[in-house]
Figure 1 (spheres, helix red, strand yellow):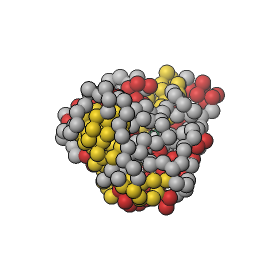
Figure 2 (cartoon, protein in one colour):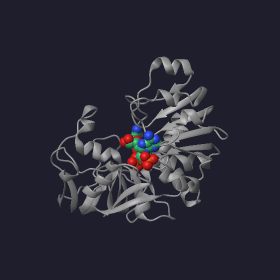
Figure 3 (cartoon, rainbow, N blue to C red):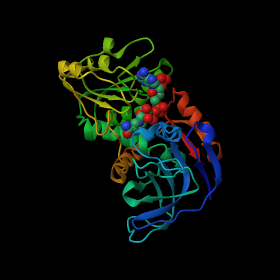
Length: 316
Ligand SMILES: NC(=O)c1ccc[n+]([C@@H]2O[C@H](COP(=O)([O-])OP(=O)(O)OC[C@H]3O[C@@H](n4cnc5c(N)ncnc54)[C@H](OP(=O)(O)O)[C@@H]3O)[C@@H](O)[C@H]2O)c1
């Protein structure tokens, strides 16, 4: 089969389109004929070698964790899905890689859900990592409740645009923070208030926020603490630095699961719930760019360039 392989750490130029052996499904796994693979900053960070600081990434490897495709074969003991089912998932995260930048990949059934019927494979591949991160940040670790005020940084990006819509779907008042070019997009997605961070700092513009989902990160998160009300919660999705004294002074909690961030986990069960909201028209999938598998390097260049609106996807 064709796949993108990485033989040495580096920039987009190390993504090599080549023939590799087709994998086979093990116990509890399915073999998926990949139709589309989602592209996340996590992939170019893994390819660059950056993530070796936290976990070993064995070479060579096929990048990618997000998939949408058709089940080609079910492995031993699999009853949850059948050959021919259209499925989507975030596979084996946070393993070093699950190899979705390929014509075929295997995945554990627990990481998969039936693809929402109202969207195509390109849109479905855009969902798993970004929407699960938003879901887990808001509802699992952030314990968001209807009526609360939620502030989301990086609101137009992959994680952010899902976080805006998921928070709205469960009854929050949502403040989106992004650069001004995304104002109309975020108003369409339903933000109650938009802050252009290039001209207005959130800490000067809002206060009494219950929950912050910080996907933008940065070098100094302390100013962001002052938008929260005492007892409020901040979920760092991207690494940011907070001084313990300022956190204590503000009387807020920062919820991390590994190192300085809340890290997403694979979950087929949560993708079922997210899929229901998509099929109900409550969550839409915005696509920034679609690139053919052979040109994956272009997708990584686009992701690393920043100002992404929605998601980048590889068409297989
Ligand atoms: N912890 C986890 O498990 C996990 C999971 C997924 C992603 N992540 C990380 O979370 C980050 C976001 O991921 P993503 O997939 O959403 O990336 P993305 O699609 O590239 O979106 C990032 C967004 O942030 C915006 N942005 C940049 N600087 C900003 C600032 N100072 N204030 C507000 N917005 C800003 C960008 O556009 P504008 O500047 O034009 O607004 C862009 O829309 C990445 O660092 C990624 O590695 C972590």
